Image 1 (cartoon, rainbow, N blue to C red):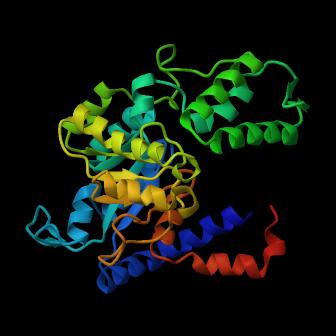
Image 2: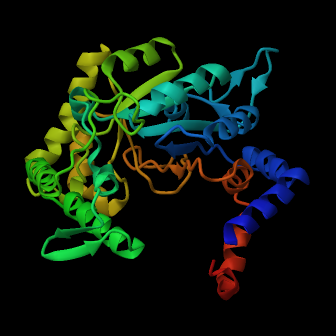
Length: 350
């Protein structure tokens, strides 16, 4: 009910011209840069791209940050008519490097001539393994029996709440491991215990939750529409790693591998998961020590020239969200909906 109400209100804002007016006012008031954080490129992305292409100046992340921090000559550019483009700069970023970023994201980037920036995990590109944070749901979905015993408890998979409890338990074990070796050992033992195996790129190519290949990445970069940054070697949550040397390795080596594979400097980094409790002080220090110029988080803030270049904010790019809701959220119009929801919370239980 709450989501339906958001769509109705966002549509009203859009068709009455309120969203457009708020956007134009915001452009005149400040020089903030919006960075959107997507992951998969699925069914909702075309509508998002069409709207954003019309109303924002979409640029590569590196270009936007050079302008923001004064490393380039101008914060605007000329359009085809020779006029200055004063639209607010906006960046589309995708984390992890799913194969659908190539199949669908790259197709859309070419169709709409929209630049995108993707943060890559070299360890997964090399191995073609299934991403660890998707392992719990995938393994449980592959189970054929109606019940399974795990960690001394029987889970009845026909009961949705027990099924979800099992998924949450597996995910929590993988998420809070203190080293990459511990995580990989847990996942290997888990697959043996459950007698199911995670997909990998060597066996299947039709699973969009698998990582891209280096060949696909080079093709995307050659187009000029796709740029890349680093996202660690193996995607651990940096603050949870026990050994500081592991933190530095994950950050520093991810840059080294990408520079070797792509043949040019890599200046941008994205923290896995990306909230402060996941980054930690050691994570920030490792990014600085590795020589990155900028690092992005998942802190939901816009960026100004006063922002910390190692703690840049990104707004969620959720393709499940209606494009009119996204448009209203980007200009700050839906805050009133949240306030109404809190005031009348009992009306929005569904």
